[in-house]
Each structure stands twice: as C-alpha cells, then as structure tokens.
Amino acid sequence: MAKNGADSETEMGVNTRLAHIGYNPRDYHGFVNPPVVHASTVLYPDAATLVSRGQKYTYGTHGTPTSDALAKAVDALEGSAGTVMVPSGLAAVTLPLLAFASAGDHVLIVDSVYGPTRHFADTMLTQLGVEVQYYDPRIGAGIEALMRPNTTVVFTESPCSNTFEMQDIPAIAKAAHAGGAVVMIDNTWATPLYFRPLEHGVDISIHAATKYPAGHSDVLLGTVSANEACWPKLDAAFSALGLCAGPDDVYQVLRGLRTMGVRLEHHRKSALEIATWLEGQPAVARVLHPALASHPDHALWKRDFSGSSGVFSIVLAGGGQKEQHAFLDALTIFGLGYSWAGYESLAVPVFLGDRTVMKEKYEGPLIRLQIGLEDVEDLKADIARGLAAIA
Ligand SMILES: Cc1ncc(COP(=O)(O)O)c(C=O)c1O
Image (tube, rainbow, N blue to C red; front, side, top):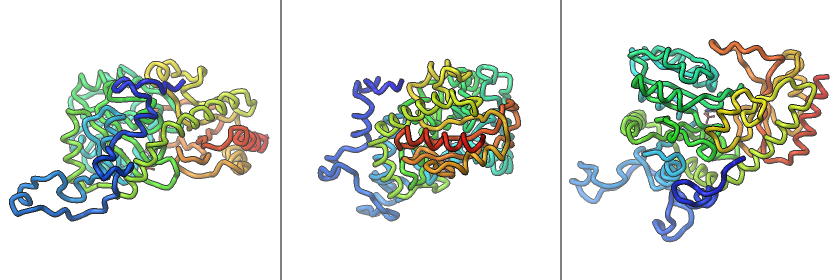
C-alpha cells in the first residue's frame, strides 16, 4: 500500500505538500505559479557587484527563479541539500558519474542498470580512464568483497531496469561508505514518494524527471539531488559542464509535480491489478513486479519502499522472438515505444544481451509493460489480445 498519509517532516500529507512545495506565491505578486524566466544575461547595479557576483542571480546557467522553485521542491521531497536540473534523465546519470569518478578510479555499477547508463560507463567513462565493474543486484553487503582502495562510486538502481531485482540499499551503502565511496541511485522508478534514498544511506539521488514528474511523454528533464557532503562537488561539476535545462521544461516538470501523487496512485493501483491478473494467465510464466508477494525480493521492497509504480515485466511461458513480437503486434491500446510513466500505456521487448554478471534463465522472452492512466478493463482486454496472438 502506498503510504500517502502524514509526512515525517511536516506532518502534512504528500498531496498537500506536492501542491505547495518549492514556491511561495507571495514571491511573485501572488500568482500561484512561478514565472518562467528565459535568461542568459542578468544585470548588476554597479561594477563592484558585477565583479564580486554579489547578488542572488548571476547568469542564466547558474539558476533562475524558475529553476530554484523546482530545485527546492525536489529537495523537499528527497530531503537533499541541493538539486540541479539537467536536460534529460540520462544527463542526470552522467553528470554525477563525471563529478565523482576520475582517471584511475574504480566504479561499481549494478549489472541490470538502465541500458544507456551502461553504454556511458563502457564508452566515455572508460575512455576517461575509469575502471568500471558490474555487480549482481542481489549482492547486498557482499559488495564489500568488490571494494578496492580506489573505488570512488557505487552506482545502484532499485528496482533494476527491465528485470526489477531489488537491491539492499542500506547494506550496500554501509559497505560502500566503509570503503570511502559515494553511493548513487537512479531512483526514477519509485520517485521520492515511494522511496527516499538519502534516508537509507545514499548520497546522490538521480531522477529521469521525464517520467512521473513530467508524466505526459512530452518533456525531457533530469534531476540530481545530493546530501550536504556531496552537494559542493556536484554543483561545481554542474557549473563546469554548463548542463543546465531550459526554463520551459523546468516549468513543465514543476507543473507535473503538482499532480504526481494523484497520477502515481492511479498507476500504482492499475499496475498491481494487472500484474496480479497476469500471474493467473497460462501464457505467462512469471510477473517481475516487486510489490507482488511472489517476487523473490518482495521482503526488501516491503521493508524500504512505501509504494510501487506502474512499470513491470512479464516472462512468457516459453517461445522466443516470434511469440514476443506476436504479443506486441496484437496490442491496440498499448503503444510500442520507449520511455514510461506517461499517461498512456506502452510495451517494449526486453533485451538482456548486455548483461555480464546476471545470467538468470527465464522461461521465455520478456516484455516490459508501462501501465498508463487508461481504464484497467480496457488494458486487460488489450493484453488478452496479445496473449491470444501467442497461442
Ligand atoms: C531508469 C531510467 N533512468 C534514466 C532514464 C533516462 O531518462 P531520459 O529518457 O530522460 O534520458 C530512463 C529512461 O527510460 C530510465 O528508464
């Protein structure tokens, strides 16, 4: 169950907080939304102030009232000391890795990580002289054995992309910190409404705000939030790279946050209902959704998370690409396309060929389902069409 009740910090419910965090209407003539500030140049009143940069806003890349509103809102949700906004979720992954890994360092990344994160690690990070090693998502405290004196980053994602293994984040964070490494998480699946990583030992929380915060498949944005200790280094890398996001996209994500709790609750309920129904379908061998009691890591999800979102995978009971494509091609409501967390349902075939550590055998091909805001009975009927096409 999602715990949408009292918030530990403010005693207010999460939807109340989402409606008000980040911005005080009194700061801008009472308008309930902040201004969308399009800015490069900011003027200074005199030469001394200009030279010392002695005012709150100094240049468009270093923040505006619009980006401050979203950063403050995300800080309130994550419990972080600072947040930066970047032009995509992938940039939200690459920025902290560039900030905290240097030539000669060793970085540990979970094997079932989001594919483009892996691609970045295997190409740019490796070219820069960083040694990348992948680890089993279920390693838990055992990660201690992989730590080296030069391990500077442990990168996690929970649940993992496409196969939805849960990671024991507190155990991994404890071992990583004992070895002096910074712990990062791609927290996109849970959003800070269902998992607050900094309370579980994580130093840097990453979001593809493209997903639930934006929610309408029309905006690309990433956020990176850090605790007190990591914030100065993250902020310095953000400034050095000039990776700031555009004001319209930042505004759209702040707008999306206001309704995220309501949307997410609908995604959560529909996805769980469909996942439970799919467990009873003979053409489906397994449903990979951590909130199902049948999931091998269900206990970890229950211990650390307060809700589940709307994307999960199914394993077909046998067959191969022919059956996988037959299922996908029979769908009429689910679109075939990448990304997730928008209002519309999507399905994609899962590719597992890049994994180097996880060698789990599945009964058949995998399909990832993103459950949108449509009516559940219509979505079930569409999936039933897909399952019938396999037969
Ligand atoms: C877990 C995860 N992280 C990051 C991203 C990247 O987000 P974006 O599409 O905004 O680059 C995605 C996108 O699918 C994702 O699934």
